[in-house]
Length: 361
Image 1 (tube, rainbow, N blue to C red):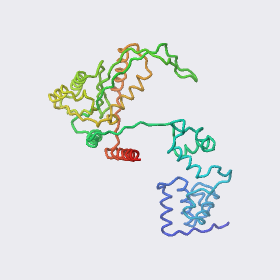
Image 2: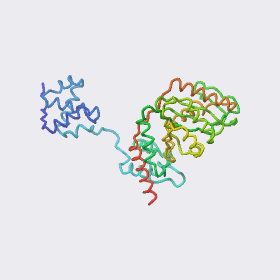
Image 3: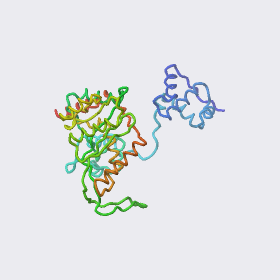
Image 4: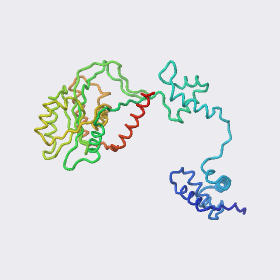
């Protein structure tokens, strides 16, 4: 039997390969290759290594030779494969990436695969492949707005603190109004979904009035105190506060997270709150509605029950909303807040720094 070349490791090499073999932040392939070399260093032959690791002898021999010739770096990368040589150079790839991220075409707001291919003299498939590899999506856009609230950090820490460390013997309620919910009906009946055919509806609709949903989401168990009213003035807000007062245990302190809508700060609202000291108001920073957890619930209501619904009257709309909320409260699922205030502040700081840099250019 042919004897394979022995592998001799010094302490540093042994430690490096051992860490890789244990899968510490390395790929499965690299971990297996490291185990091959370690077994070779113990004196095992290629066939024995193959039996031990469940691989063939040729594979064990290949990575033994590669390590002896190139060391640890030889295990990290596969050898170049035969085939058609690259026609797009690294410089061309970088040029396409730079042009995509730093420029715009003369007659459009963003690049397309066709316009970039024409501009750079390559195929659409090449552009698509480069964009995919670098995670570039010129057609996509996300919205943002940084708060200019001078007390942003203080309010942020206050609200996130309620989510992550709620006070004992108290309820934390995320409250808001979803106003101007339209009772829309289509001008013709919907056509039901069929094989290879989605549900079909007319593009036009009839407005049958609006309602406002008042909701207080219990951040602990996901249940929602709610009501629908025609308007959302301070009078309706006080009615909703009274509803919360009736539907919560009387001895519990109530911490309400609300936005900066003027209704929530009306003098008559403040007077009512003064007469009910168990209510504690916590205001989100301006332009930070994303910080109010009930907004996530409003999205679910919209997507699951309102957006594709048809309602012949406001009464039908309210019945649909109340049915949805009833089923939610029978089997509630709380939203779990995980972001720390420090992480959010760091992200906001980076965004503000980038905006300031753009403004100074």
